[in-house]
Length: 270
Ligand code: ATR
Image 1: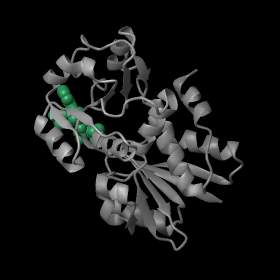
Image 2 (image 1 turned 180 degrees about the vertical axis):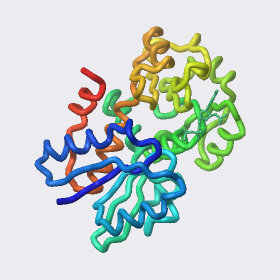
Image 3 (image 1 turned 120 degrees about the vertical axis):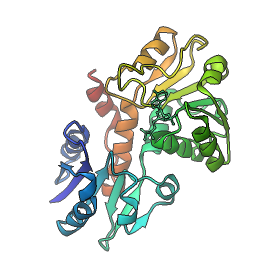
């Protein structure tokens, strides 16, 4: 029997075990997936244990996505570029290879919902942290050829634009004023996770029909999405990204495609 895991701190809230175990059952795969609580100081010993105990693969979540890089034997070029890993695969020879499926998961989720024929040069990314980096790299690879990145700390947005060698960095205030210029707006700050910081800026100038995405999925409708919905935007919740990043990991591990639509509906509570 194969086994898989997710390591993180905290880990109890993770929906990954339920998601992957459901997929194993749906596809009649003899495997199991367990959550393992691993604190930062124990990461290296935890990875050694996963090796020793024969895990076929595992996911990596907060706070280990960056720290795990030097503990792996090989890195996918995209994970290397992002400097973050969320999926590890045990290769046939036993070596551990790291991938990052978060950004590509976001793009798949977005395009599953809105198709692929829209303009790819009018994207506004709000945020320039780790999650924003992953999405920016994946969007660039998927053919989005201009991204405007706004961030509270503009220097961080500028650094990301420089790394991408593409796009423009602006302030949150500027983004708020220019909002009508974008057909896709992606919220990747910690907004919505705590009550004091519900919105990165007001959506006064948001046009009807603009695609507005958030990567948070608990709550499903973040304060940002609620406001966007009120302004008749097309909203994309974070559940799709979560499910698709898991599905891409699953494909790396098992060379099979799990059912994402049913899983998105289940997790969204429809
Ligand atoms: P993650 O890996 O989840 O992206 P992160 O790297 O800490 O986490 O990034 C958090 C993002 O939320 C950053 O874009 C951050 O802006 P700064 O780069 O200026 O710190 C943004 N953020 C966090 N709290 C914020 C707040 N109160 N107002 C505006 N932006 C905030």
